[in-house]
Structures are given as structure tokens and as C-alpha cells.
Image (cartoon, rainbow, N blue to C red; front, side, top):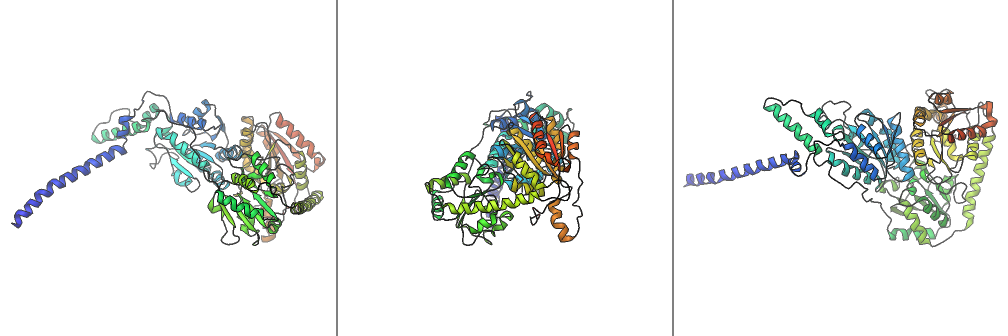
Length: 632
């Protein structure tokens, strides 16, 4: 009986096992067919006769998003998207270094509130952009970087310039994706551009392998053997390649929505706004510090300015918020920030981070009530567990919050003595600046005096681009942007080399503005070659180089602390002549013509108006103006 039962069980087990095995095999085959794209190919055709290419899809999405400029340094991996963009009316501007292309895209993003776009070739083309992309991340600029790549089948097989690019950019970018099929170009780019602008803005990266950008017939020629192979293995390989090719192009030209996706922008809740209204309404010495986030869309700069004026709270402006109130506005306090913050009883940190710029929060008084508003929760509370503590922390859009705050306060005003006290401190500090400008220097020109003359000469329609250490740090105290979105500096990363790219983007966005670039001589070394770019593309910008023959911001501390000027010395190089060699105009300011500073600046302006980029090489001496400033 036991043997009969065992035999019966075996007979019942065998069909069940065979059924399970067959089911597993079918499931595996279906899964393999899905992964190979066979089902998709049944429903979506491959147009083998089409001469269209994926670059056209890229250009269509950029055009639908209002992109006007595409910055690049050309490479064979990305040629189709450059050609297609030009055909759609997008201005393609090629630079002499990939980092400049990304800096230019960054400037466009900051000045227009849209996504700035750069495209570079694979491998070293992309690695050359890392610094600019990191700078965009820290400055919270929505930049889209399009990168070429080796073909989808050749990655990790030793192809030319093939590296793991996604891993390189993932720590830097909000969104990283590699497009594997032509039909995925449009949705991937739309998602990337939405991600760049949503929440806390930042850079995004989309990798475009070469075989998703070129036409079918060209990819087929490179991918599939011309002659039919012999032997089973050869035929299997040939079928796999042909199927891969078909999957690349299946459904490639079917219509898809190309326009912008909705953005996710955090907003302060009514309850949070009301609590902040109540805190501020009880203040006697309120103070506001506005940072770059305040100038982000959707709040237009003019509305934000009107709101700040209505609020009536004295304020410090930093980053892209510089110039928000124009020149010499009574509410704009420019000097003695640390002292003012210690005295204030309520401080509004509007898009400002308690990092090294605010001494990690140590400049804030423990007796002050702190309201902080920021799109980024982590940055908003940086160092709040150590040196400061907010009374109210609001995660939301800064500009929208300020508008709601003004509405909630309903025209409340504050006693004028607080603003007058801050203004008087400003006047005293500026008097010391005038005294320093009058002091003689050992050689060449006094940089403080030169920059004061720049301030007097700067026109109302100017955009200031600053790139440097000591000279630019001095200029930040002396030269005022004339309006909102008229000041471009690298941001908290302190990157040198942004100047040419920022100037390029600024002049293209605002062709009627005068773009004045203030360079230190060390920083200018990064940008000099791009005067070739300005000449070729007929982009007249004006560069003022504060030439003190050294990395002065570093030597200012290194020499007294360590007793050596090693690696800090440069030469009084003829930068104006180097620019002339690139086809630009060049002017020299030195002690020989120190009484003609304004005239030389006016001459440079006129040459720019005539369509020429200009370099003014200003030989300057050294002062104690920035003694004690930080370099690390």
C-alpha cells in the first residue's frame, strides 16, 4: 500500500512540476521579449527610410520651453542637436572651454528665471564642466547640461571617451538620466527641466548616447554588419544587433507633448505667515536680509521691490538680490551688517543661509527673534543646532512669502530712528572709504579711488559681473548695481573663472545693457581666451582688470602668517595687448594717466557701443582696505 501511495504521488507531482516549469519558461520568455522591446515593436513602427534624427527631438523640447540660447563646445557626439537647434532658431554659441558654456547657461538662468542650457561632448568635454555644475548647485541655478556619450552598446567596452558619466554627476545634480531610446528623449528632457526649476532650483544632467542622436541609416551602418554572418552564433549576434537598432528607433517620431510640465514650488502656509506677522508687528528694530532666492520666479522683481518698500524694514541685500532697491535707497543698508544684526530685535532671513557669510549664525543675537524662510529645509536650518535658533522656520518661496507678509501687516510702520541709526553708521563707514581712496599707494593706482570712479561712471542700464578676490571684494563695498538682476557673482562656492561665461550670458539676455566685468588679474587668466568668443560672436562687453600682479587675497594672509609669498606672485601682464591679439580692443590705466581714469572708462564704453569687446588693464597698488578679510 505504501508503494502504491508513493507511486501515485510521483504521478501527480510530475504533471505539476512540468506545468510549473512550462509556466516559468513562458514567463521568462515573455520577460525577455519585453526587455528586448519585441512587444513595443509590434505596436510601434520603425521608419527605416526616415532621415530624421534624435537631435531634432532635443531641439523641439528646448524650443517649446522657450530656450533662446544653447552654449556649447562642439564635439561629434552632439553635432545633431546643435544643427537641429540652429534650424529652429535657437542661437548656438560656442565657447573656447566647456566650463564657460555652463557658466553662460548659469547666467541666463539667473537673469531670465528660466532654464539655462549647455551641451558638451562626451568624456573630457563633460569632466571640464564639473566645477561650473557644482557652482550652479550651490548657487541654486536651474541649468540643464546635455552630454554626449558613447553608443548604447559600446559603453563599458572601451569606446572613445566613454566613462561612467552618470555617477560623476549624480552627487551634483537634482536629476540625472541617460536616454536609451530615441522615443525617450522628449519625456526625459521635460522631466529634467521641470526638476531644475521645482523646489530648490539646481542643475540637471541628461546623457545622450550618440546612437540616439544620429539618423537610422547612419546608426545602422555602424551597428549592423553589411554582410549576413555565417554560423549560428554570428546569426544570433546579428539578430540581437538588428533588434537593438529597431528598439532604439521604434516609435521615435510619434507625436508627444513637448512643452513644460507643472512646477512644484513650496509655499508658506497661511498659519506660518500669520505667526510671522505677529512676531514682526511687535518689533521695534526689525531687519531683513534678502538673498538670491528672493529673486526666483514666480514673483517679479518689481513686485518684490514694491513689497519691500511697503514693508519699510531696513534690509541688507546679497547675491542676486543686490540692486533690488536700486542705488542709494534709504532702506538699503550696505555696511556694518554684523553690528546691525546684533542690535535688531527681529531678523528676517529671506533666502539667506547661516554659513560662513553669517559666521555660521554667530552674528545673530540670542535675544533676537529670528524668522527664516527658504525653499530648502536643510539649508534653512544650517547650524541652528549650534549657534542660533529660529523663532519661526518657513519652508517656502521667499518672494511669495514677502508679499503675503506685507499683506498681513496692512501698512504697519516703524519708528524712523532705527533706520536713521543704521544710515548714520553707513555714512561713517563710507567716509572711511573716501579717506582710504585719498591715501597714496607705493606704486600704480589706488584701487579704492579707481572703484569709486567706476561707481560714478557706471550707467543706469549696466549689468555688473564680478570675478576675483581682493579687487572684487573691494568693489562689493564701493560699486552698486543699478537695479534688480544687475549683479552676477559666483555665489557661496567662491569660484574663480565665472566672468567670461556670466558676461556672455548677460549680454545675450540683455543686448541693450552695458555689461561691465570687474576682474582680479588672477581670475582674468581663466577668461582671457574667451575674448576670442566675444569677437567671433560680436558680443561687446567691457572688462576692467584690477592688475596688482598677484593673488593678493591669499598673500594678504599667507605672508604675515607663514612668512612667504610663494605661489602668490604674478606679473604686471599686458592683458590689454593680449586681448588685442584676440581681436578685441585694449586700454591701459596706470600712474602715467591717473588723471584720465574717467576718460578711459568713457572711451571703453564708446568702443563697446561701437560693437567691440574691450579690456581695460588697470595697474593698481595695494592698500589695507581688506585687511582681515577671509580667504579660507
